[in-house]
Image 1 (cartoon, rainbow, N blue to C red):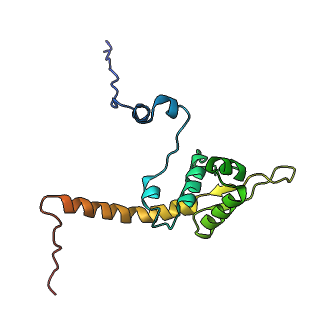
Image 2: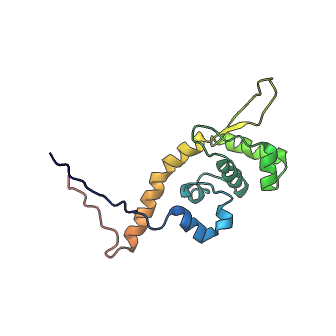
Image 3: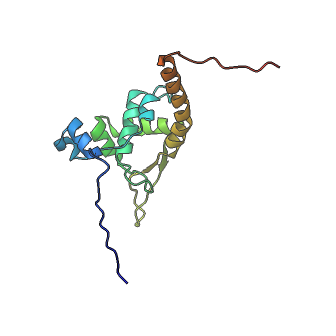
Length: 161
């Protein structure tokens, strides 16, 4: 009995990778230092979430420390202070405001010897709020697209009672 041999050629489906696009936009030396994935809806819904610019900056910094979805970010107030040019006490106040709004939850961490460590920051409140807002923003975007289409917005047909 004879066996047939077949050969296959692997073809890349993506001609431009995401990192190459980022390198092209920002430059390789910049991208080499890392990046942070932030959903655009967070930026677009800033006003709707009632975030002032500094509160948004604090959230963006926390997001930059959040690489593993199963491990909450835990930067020190000092690290956030240095990045944002604010005092540790100011950082504490902004985080407390975000906590009052239900966007962030501080989780105390302790060392094995009982000493204090930097807090963990649970962003699940922010994530849930963004999940609720996302469909509304998508509907508004669809409405904008419909307005610019030829023929504009179609009138809804209302059945007669």
